[in-house]
Amino acid sequence: MDTETSLQRLIAKPEIAAPAAAQARKRFPDRPAKRDTKTKGDASEMRVILALSEAGYAVSLPFGENHRYDLIADDGARLLRVQVKTGRLRGGVIKYSCSSSHAHRGGYRRSYFGEVELLAVYCPDTRKVYLLPESQFVATQSHMRVQPPKNNIKKGIRWAQHFELAQVVVRPDLPEG
Image (cartoon, rainbow, N blue to C red; front, side, top):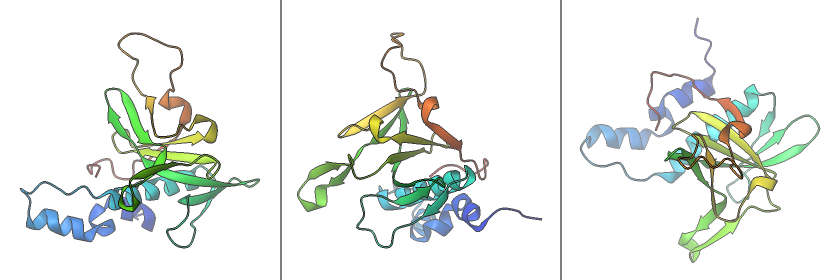
């Protein structure tokens, strides 16, 4: 009997979450894929919701798209505003943005200080979710180290393992988007 939840099935099958992108890949396999940040962000958000739910949080979604946070995590004592970001593993570090970009509205970046309590970073390369409190935010871009630096410096490093919430592997046989 299949015990996967509908959310897990949706995450495991990217063609369900992004049918237009899947159809385009089938019709034009040699054409480079367009950078689809909305679909990637939605996929990261689904994985964060799954990880938070499995960790015991009640998760709520705000109505509409005009909020500084993507979801609310309820730990039973507090309601925490969470902004979800997609991280990319590059050179032993997971890089992610700590601000929103409004290039389409004049080209400025806006940080999340005072507007969210947690930044949740999903990294497709590690398939893990990381939760960072506001004390770890910076104004623009940041990173968490996965591998030791080549120069052996140990002080002042933000280690990813310290912020790891969960590994999200619904179907390990499927490639990440």
